[in-house]
Image 1: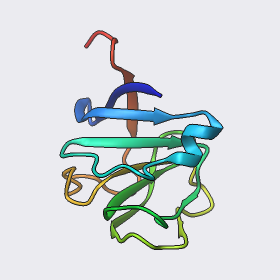
Image 2 (image 1 turned 90 degrees about the vertical axis):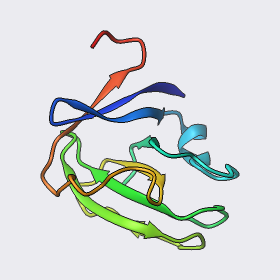
Image 3 (image 1 turned 120 degrees about the vertical axis):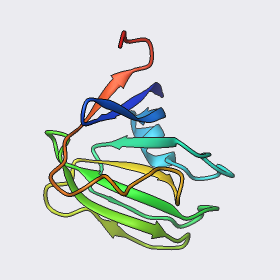
Length: 121
């Protein structure tokens, strides 16, 4: 998985992000992890819906379209959910441990961006 940051409004919003792009990484997601930790997130590409069956902790989700615009937010999704749908336009999802990221400034329609870990700021 690639490492990077998530940018919102020109500033780093998520300092520690992993990007799941391969089939195996997308399929695995957060399964089996005891925690993600504060300020960390997993970005799953080519993903319009998720489940939390087999997960050990609740998550907050930010669904994004192909242009990296927020299309749906779901807070505190508990383990054991069979499906959480991001909507017709959802193309990727950002998952974080519930309360691990400050979602108060994120709104539907906001644009996010990915920055590789080794990229210059």
